[in-house]
Image 1 (tube, rainbow, N blue to C red):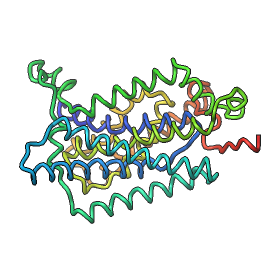
Image 2 (image 1 turned 60 degrees about the vertical axis):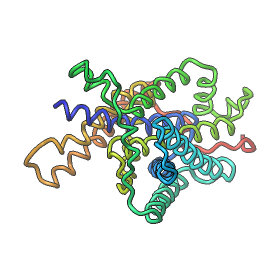
Image 3 (image 1 turned 90 degrees about the vertical axis):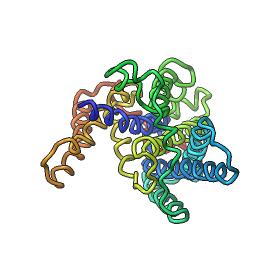
Image 4 (image 1 turned 180 degrees about the vertical axis):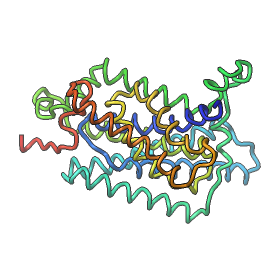
Length: 318
C-alpha cells in the first residue's frame, strides 16, 4: 500500500502540471485540446537539453552540476511548451482558426515532433533523471510520513507550488479577475478596457509552458528517464482532470492523486487479465463523466466552465 500511494502521488503530480496549465488557458476562454502535443514537445525539449548538457560535460570531463542538470531541462521545457502555446494563440486569435481543430492538429504535430527527435538521437534513457528523483535529505528520518510526503523529487513539489500560486492569482489578484472576465464575457471585458487578445495570448503561452512540465515530470520522475514512452494519453487525462476539479487548481492537487491511483491500481492487483487492466485505466474518464453530469445537473455557477470557453472573439464583430 505504501508503494502504491507513493507511485500514485508521483504520477498524480504529472497530471497536476497539465491540469493547472490547461485551467489557466481555459480561464481565458481558450479550449486547448493540444495539451497532449504540448506535453510531448515539452518533454522532448527538456530531455534533449538534458542529453546535450550531460554529453557536453562528459566530453569536457567535468562533473555535471545537479542544479544545472535540473534547471536546464526545466527552462527548455518551459520554452518548448510556451512556443506551442504561441502557435495555438497565433492560429486561433490572429488567424481566427477554429480552436478545436487547431488543438487536435497541435496534438498530432507535437507527437510527430517528439517521435522525430527520438528517431534522430536514438532511444534515450536519460541518466539525468537521478537529479529529478532525489528525495529531501530528511525524508529517511521521518519514517512512513517521510516516505509519503518527503521522498519525492523537485518536480513533485514544484507542481504543488504552481497549483497553489495559480489558485491564489486567479481568485485574489487583479490579473486573475481580468483573466476570468475575459473567459466569461470577452466583449464586456473589452468594453472595460481589458486587452482580450493580450490576456488570451499570455494565458495560453503560460498555461502551455506549465503543461509542458507535465511531460518532463512523467519522463524524468515517473519513468526514470525513459524518453521512448509515448505520453500523449496522459495529456487527455490532464484535460479530464480540469473538468473533474471544476476548474480549481487547488482542488486538482487532491484530484490528481486520485487520478494517479485509479490509473495504476490495476498494476497492484494480481491475477487480472490484460483486458481488465484496460478497464481499470478507464476509471479516471468514467469518474470525470459522472462529475460532469452531477455538476451540470446542479447548475452551480462555481462549478461551470467559463461561459466563452471555446468561443472565438473578434473585436470587429462586437
